[in-house]
Image (cartoon, rainbow, N blue to C red):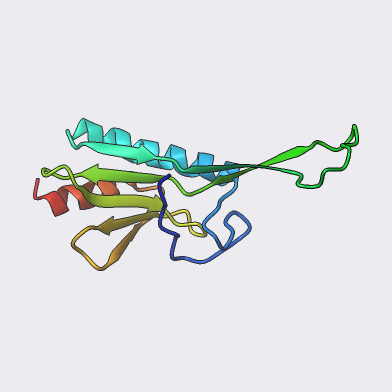
Length: 137
């Protein structure tokens, strides 16, 4: 199972403290990253979108009879923020694009850079421009 990086902008009703987001937020972020992915593909840049979902199953440990209205096993599903990763010439993850949990902006982080670039969601072409500039193309 892959571990994703928690967003740095804080929490709101769409994200819990452990990096888990709601289904609606995940779908919205997936659509926004799909736009950037399509634009990168048009420029011949190799990128991958990743979605991390944690699934769990646990049962009652008590050996009592199970009531008809109470299931004997329970499940949980946690959705983590999706990522778009740009693969460099050596096959390594050079750039990661995620979405800000509160602002909805694109968050662009570079492998060799310490800074995190923020781009408004209405401007996916600027994300592509940042990536092109970082790759020197």
